[in-house]
Amino acid sequence: MNFNTFKNIYEESADPIRSLIRLAIKRFKIGEYETRIKNGAVNRPHYAHCVYQAAVLGKKLGYKTISVLEFGVAGGNGLIELENHAFEVSKITGVDIQIYGFDMGSGLPQPLDYRDMPYLWKKGFYKMDVDKLKLKLNKAKLVLGDVSETVKTFFEEYKPAPIGAIMNDLDFYSSTKNSFKLLDGHENNFLPRVFCYFDDVTAREPHLYNDYTGERLAINEFNQEHSDIKFGLPYYLITKEIVRQWYHHIWILHFFSHAKYNNFVHGENLQLPCD
Image 1 (tube, helix red, strand yellow):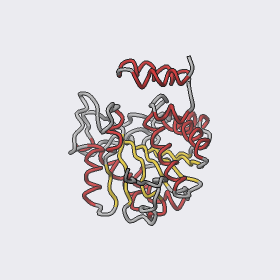
Image 2: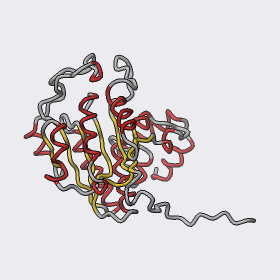
Image 3: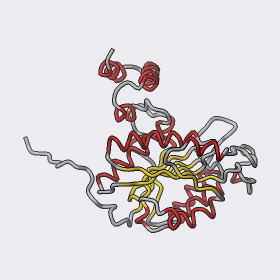
Image 4: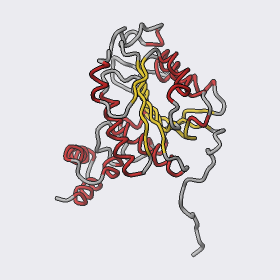
């Protein structure tokens, strides 16, 4: 059975069957990578989606290199997967992708108050074996230390290419809020629209995430505090006929005053001639 047959069955099937087909495509890497991304048939499809969309946008705007960040590296599996996706996406788009992972290395700090949800998280969770992880990384760079401090010197010390995607898995309200200090850097440090993934915004009990704690509170406060930089929901995803769970973890960060925000990127001559 070739990939087109798989694809036809997938498009005509009910969701449970689609899930099985998607698993088969993912496991055996059937078809081109770009198609597998669009069907969610890759590891960590949310990472793949953000990296791919950022590279596509970057290419349309004339960037040869972009950066993607992960806040909250923990054991490092996500950062390794980011490298895998960046390698494939670069082959497709021709855009080089730098990768940076922010983490304390020593695990979660002490929760400050109820907004950090101490009913879920404890100090020391998610420690990193730094030496072991470094041996597994090919190009990603670790930015180790308290995020409230490392974001202050990140642009000066690392001189990254413009940031196009951010994966945020810092768990706490306070840590997420501190990571947002990076966003107040000069607009040239970012693409005009940045694809963002937040890990801790939906889940089953006992998590009970809400808009008044954790990452959701940090996002809401950021939007209230900024007039020309806003996190927006991905309506292009959450209004699809079939909505995957991770769609609800994606936000698009808009830099409305960015010099390239209004650059035309559609790429088509849209006309509606009268018949």
